[in-house]
Every structure is written in C-alpha cells, then in structure tokens.
Length: 129
Image (cartoon, rainbow, N blue to C red; front, top):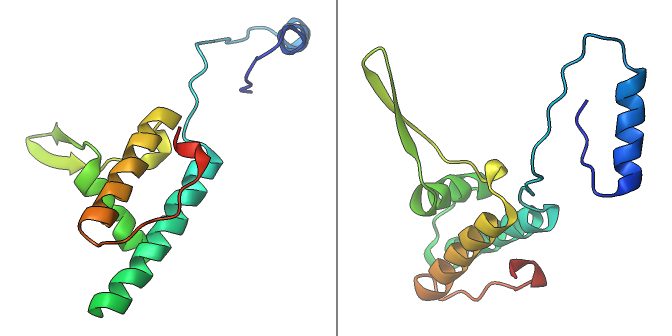
C-alpha cells in the first residue's frame, strides 16, 4: 500500500494500520514529490488539439495530438542514452514523471513555440504558476 501523509490524523491512521499488519512487513517513506497535476495534463492535451487543428487549417498537414506530443517531448524534454550489451538506444522522455514545476516549464516551452513559430496564442490557465 502507498499513501500520502499530509496531516497528523493521516499519520495516526497509517501507524494504526502498520501496528495491525502481519509481520514481517516492509515499510518505506520519503519526502512527498508532486507529479504533474491533472489540470496541467488536461491543459497539455487541450493545447495539442488546438495546435493540431491550427496546423491543419494553416498548412494542410494532418497530425494527431499524440504525434505532436512526441514531437514536443523530443524538442523540449531531455532524453538519455542507455547502452546494454554494447547497443545504445535513446530513452525518450516522459511527462508522467515530471513534477508540477517541470511540467510548467514544459508547457511554457510549448506556449513560446506556438506563439513564435506558429503565430498561435494558446489559452492560458492559472496552473502555470
């Protein structure tokens, strides 16, 4: 089981569950790290759809939102090379592992690209702060 403890009541509840569990038991903990928010993810896919339609309307090229997502990840997120048995491959970056600050930076990069290259102003939400 994995849970986030944010209050003393949460901590008491978790400790009660641990005390009641059968032994042996593995317990681990760490500082809470917020992944991208659902709102950020929703905004990303909204933007990708807007960009997709804009490109289709202005240049006739048809892309899916998923293709644009891959393109933007390759453009703005770091990837790494992993070598196994002498064969090197590039591991693609993923937005699912970004924290909220990193996701904000990624969204800001997409917004800048849309404005400067596509001449497209994307709708803003307060979640980029």
